Amino acid sequence: MNNILVLPMLLPIVVGVLLIFLRTYGRIQAWISIAAMVVTAGTSIYLLHTVQADGILRLDFGGWEPPFGILFVADSFSVLLVLTASIVTAVCLSYALISTSKELQTMYFYPTVLFLAAGVNGSFLTGDLFNLFVCFEVMLLSSYVLLTLGNSKRQLREAIKYVSINIVSSWFFLVALAYLYGTLGTLNMAHAAERVAEVGQTPLLTTISLVFLVVFSLKAGLLLYFWLPGSYSSPPIVTSALFGALLTKVGVYALFRIFSLIFYHQPEITHTIIGIMAGLTLIGGSLGAIAFNDIRSIAAYNVVIAVGFMLVGLAIATPEAIEGSIYYLIHDMVAKALLFLLVGTMITLSGSSKMAGMSGLMKNYPLLGWSFFIAMLSLAGIPPLSGFIGKVLISSAAIDSGSYVLLALALLSSIFVLYSLLRIFKNCFWGETIVSKEEQLPLRRGVLLPCLALVVLTIGIGLGVEGLSLYVTDAAETLLNPSTYINAVLGIIQ
Amino acid sequence: MESLIIILVGVLTTVAIYLVLSKNVVRVILGTAILSHAVHLLILAMGGLKQGTVPLLGEEAEIYVDALPQALILTAIVISFAVTAFILVLAYRAYQELETDNLGAMRGSDDE
Image 1: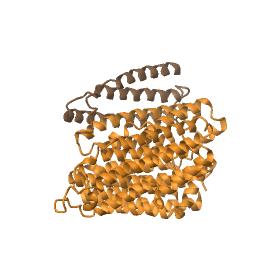
Image 2: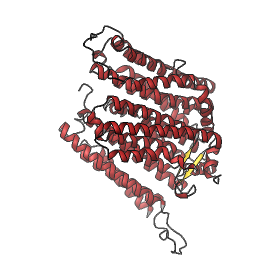
Image 3: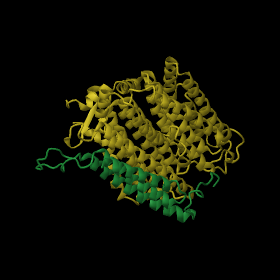
Image 4: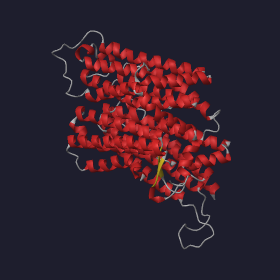
């Protein structure tokens, strides 16, 4: 009865294929794809409750029992992320329905987004490293297409760089997989974890783990984020929002999974390196966020800062820190989508992505202004919004474990986040109104609804932490006790 | 035999990296294609070369070869085929729009 586990990946693919045949009907495609993502979200809520009641679920494809076959594994961590990703995708799709051009909508935009969601959900759920590679590729190929849809010169230019860098990182992934298979003779995550625990993490295995670190750092934008700002600030805004909310988070998820399940025996090497990389990411991201006048670049650098912040939690690796990172991961998916959608709306309204090109928007569009204000507070980690709990937990864990440098960097980066967004708020929303009430572009009807939905979500997560804590605590416990995961996968089914 | 293959993998990777680092888009794409060949050979070598008969029922052999690396390579080949096809089309479109195939000229600035 675990077959439902395949739905978060299968449903978007099947619906996406069907939508290809409805190419000319933009609105119908939009509604069907939103419905598909809502059903996926509903499924993951059901899965979340089942995981609480019955423990970790697994689905062996074709009845091949692990470690021989490919399988999907659902623990609280992965299902929480599937749930958040599905909700955020649904919201972004509804923004696309309201705001994007008809041309984009009929050029296979919706099917591609669904394929992207399938890849993301598959990456979260899979229990096999090679299958993780395949799901990554499903996600990446869709992201290549999304990045080039829109066909502006800048997009094509950035797409070549993005595709090339991702081909190279996929190559590293295959190299790491080959070495791991050569050493351990298995690619099943639980089986690999068991074998590493048996033979001990030899220097060879630690080296392989560092190759994995390079791969996932490239995907997550941990230190190796040089490709990120350019490619996240060139496509249509819905695409940027999806990228900012989902793509880097998959890399972060993979880092958490690999370094808590398989390669956790040599933390003085691997976790120290992750800590250093996270610290440098925080510094680089902060500098980037205050260096630009283009509001999309500022938003893109905020993605980088958040990645660094989450990985601080993994570097510390106490239960509290991991819990904090999970909260922050969930928060960041929602808040980054919100930030990008708001920034996109601002650009549409003012016709410029430079801060100099807009001023006094608060007078013309108060609702937009206050939504941006809430997004800013949430990203900076002001209570009672969703960013607060993650920051508190990670900070207090950093104090407990004596990682004062990381603590200082993490808190300073929050100030930089606040400063970079306050700059946008002050320059674009306050100040003299440069367009009069008569001349202002009307806000397209309903365009703020998706943004408001995300605002409600970020407030809701902040206020409803109590309700979430059950799941997050369970997720952190599973991450810190790999034996739970291994037993659930390698044990005999029911 | 494995050692020979590993040396071949090294040579292919060297060639590929040389190509990837050049400024011409088409050379970069050829470089990525050779990179993927190199890693496929690496996976093959990691599984061990020709140690037994084909893994089929009825072969009645002492040892069978490990079939998993082949399955992995097959999947990887399909994916790299799709990605290479995509980036070739992308490079052509970019050449039409930007009128250059020089990556140095594609750096661009944010002011456009």
